[in-house]
Length: 311
Length: 311
Image (cartoon, rainbow over all chains, first blue to last red; front, top):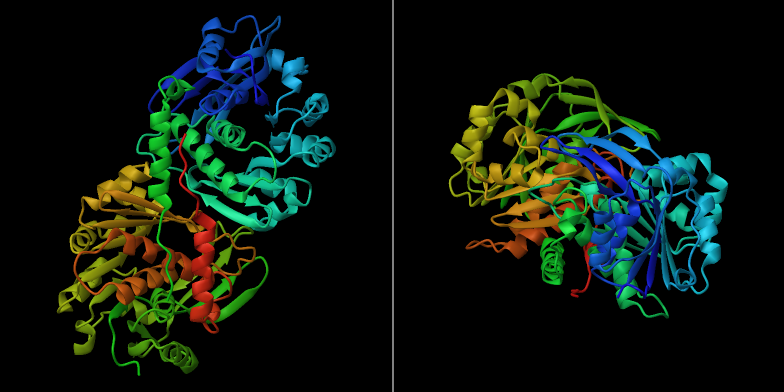
């Protein structure tokens, strides 16, 4: 078990402290690679590459392993694990970072194992684009590459970021980042400008307003599932990415990438993101089943379906 | 021509001065009843009830009349027309009201003609709920009623507003207003609480994030069309309402209101709202055709369609 991998993610594994209006949790499992790989584990053979400190509880690694995540790339180093402390506003639309300690993550320099370099799909989580390039250079036969980034790298490492962008298929970012990267206010214009930088597809994540896919010439709008109980939206974007890339890994076996598969991958991403928000940390993935996922797929169909109309 | 009406709207007709980052327009046609009836005119026999001053240019009334709007309820009074002056931020997400002069609209007290009281569908635009009630009381055989409101009435005329709510089928409002009216942050909880106040359906308008329909037990998400050139979003909500109620007037001939018809009405509303944003004032409606509307319907289908998926 857990030895094969079709989808590899490189990113962070963290210990988060999270405060919402309703409750708080200290030192829970977090980080982009954790959320991504947990979500992806329901769809495909996923492995992660990340670094933690000596203080990282074994139970967290065991939890990911039990989900089926290949955790052989989870390196333990001397020092402390990346820690983040955040607080959400009433309606979850504002998040304040109260404390960020990079710790061992500051010196992260991912070296892939031979098995990892053979992965068919790769997701480069939100890390220094110089490191993202170094990971890409190690890949032997990768067919689809997804990328996440953030304002910090757009502002501070633009050149390296542009070099990665030329080599990726999918860029996932939020609307503010899309505007910053492109210098365009209008989201359509921003996405089109970014597509000209390299990515075939740009996915603009908009929180509870859903996500927009700009794939070649087409646009697809995936709504967010309206949830009556949002508990903790931390990691929703990474869970989206895990569901999205996980679905592609599961369904796409090479050749032309049909637009309809990418649309379904968007719905799968939205599904995993919606589950993520229903509990703190990665807790919603603990008892998640294929049956529940299928049932949420149907709920998304219900949410968006209408018959054709004409005058 | 223009004598019959199936759908009646009561609201404002205004002269707007609008500033965007790209351009500005002074004293153009505006107001909720103008946008609503212009959008609705492409779908059904619509009439408006509103008041203007002696300064109201004839060409504006003639424009609405040429669209097919029954303008017999456009009363001209001594005094000046309602004027609004607003400015939009770069990305159109913020609007600042620079000046509002109610003028003759301050004394608006709609009295319906016999023909108007026979309308089958009624939309009560954003006016004092006391007046909305007075209009409702004049209706003889109305079958579907839609309502718009705003923070000002939710805060200041709650009791009258609750009385109207008990008598309407559809409430259209934005997310902030839904939260204020219900006292709930979560939009699903807010919409459900509002449904318990009377309306069978609550439509939460979210600007470029689209609109959510809470109809009986079901939720439907209609995206906004991603537009590469937003010129002026003024009146988009009212155009949505005109497209929504106009479609119901066109398609629904009585009996049980099927949920699928309401979903299609949402897409028709989103279509008319998207056209509205493409030019200043009501200018996009000047050369709009059924062919263009049908083609935007298809674009909405393209934007949202995905095949069923399962694991």
